[in-house]
Length: 243
Ligand SMILES: [Zn+2]
Image (cartoon, rainbow, N blue to C red):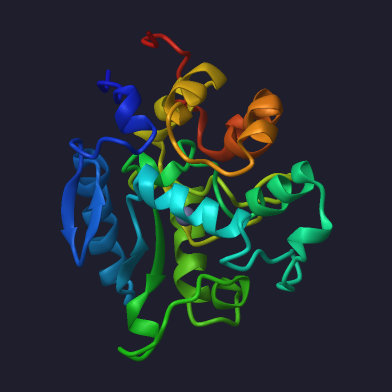
């Protein structure tokens, strides 16, 4: 049984579980080893499986959240149009941000198990990766890599990496570029609850806090917990070691 992360590691406040993969990317050692195996398999198929973003800290996620909630950073809708946040109620503002940005303390990127990927062999060296649906669509530059990943996942030969945001279920938008190392992340997800989040936010500057705290159980259900079928059943185990 894998050792669970501490509460501070789970919420991105402690990164002591992480190892460096180069160019600033950090992952949990087990996820890093599995990712290197997946990179080697991808290389044999002609892809250069690269990391756009791996671990992200609480401080970084909180800065993103506050920048969006205060209007200093744009919030887009599903069509890619900028949302006029000032015209929305506070709960509506929170939902608009949550479609594309995680609540600080709940990002899967906190755990060191999740990362955003692209195919560096498919674009020029100076290409700026956007992480948009167009890039990962079949005709996009990273479409072939994702088709290859789909086939590996379907055969359970993807070294434990699967897609938690493969389908739009009314919470987080579809993110085909986001991969998660299921053997660890299923446990991380099962440890997150409202009490842990409230403790995590205590003393932090977090905009829209009142709305978030009032709606926390519903927000966790809609935007944080993904339906169990995102990965094969053999990776899913009961909450047998939790606290
Ligand atoms: Zn991601």
